[in-house]
Amino acid sequence: MLQKKEMQKLCYIYILAAGSLWGTIGFYFHYLSDFGLDRFQIMLLRIGIAAVFLGIYILLTNRQLFRIDWRDLWMFAGTGICSLMFFSYCYFTCIELVSVSVAAVLLYTSPMFVMVLSVILFGEKFTVRKAAVVLMTFAGCVLVTGISGGNAIGMEGILIGLASGFGYALYSIFSTYALKKYHSITITFYTFVLAALATLPFSRVNQILPLIQEPKVLLYGLGLGILACLFPYLLYTRGLTGVAASHAAVLATVEPVVATIIGVAWFGDSMTLGKLLGIVFILAGIVVLNTKAEAEHDLQDA
Image (cartoon, rainbow, N blue to C red; front, side, top):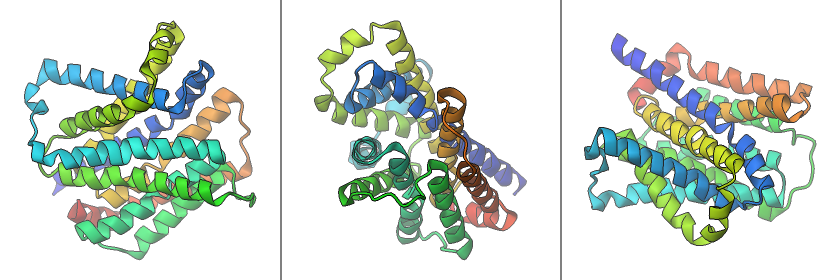
């Protein structure tokens, strides 16, 4: 039992680390956009670099990780196309329609979707504590992104933003199925490959190739692909082996906390009382989720 608890704690750390690394996406996106890359090109650069580096790693270490049953391709289409590509497209589109802050809040409706789907598909227990934690972390995201002032938002932006949250949630769901049969590295690799192939037709690759010859573009691209895509997806998928999907989705809400800190420290964004309260709400939700009672439920659910 002690060993299982230690494994679960490690999985919690994996997911928190993944969320923290995802919080750096805005940093790289900001600079790559300044060089003239559009959202599809940045998506392809991010996913493509991650796929290439992970493929090389598998090739050099354990080629058995390439082996899959092609009848299971639906799992990787789920994580790669239905989740990674779909939510990325919806998220960046939502940013264009409304704002970064509103898009971020709508993206983090994902724990609610994960909780409902996990109850229906995996028989996870629905508890008052889980519901309270989801509401607490969502309120924290609202405060962190600073949209609690009541600005009018168009219905199109809301629907696309909610779609990004649903797509984001699907990664936890499809990965839970895939982890019953495949290693987390295999799942992550085929997620990247299918997402990259699906993004390719929309990316105007002929425009990307000259740009990546610029040292700064290549540097930011490598950072986005490795630090903000490859590592966090490996960590998150590995974390799902010991943490229930609904809990993992809540833990990942550390992402907007990190993004806010980067915005304040690097881009000179203001740190308001609302943002501080939002960070406290998110961290408090994660602490509540990690109490002894919930940890025991998690060990049973995962």
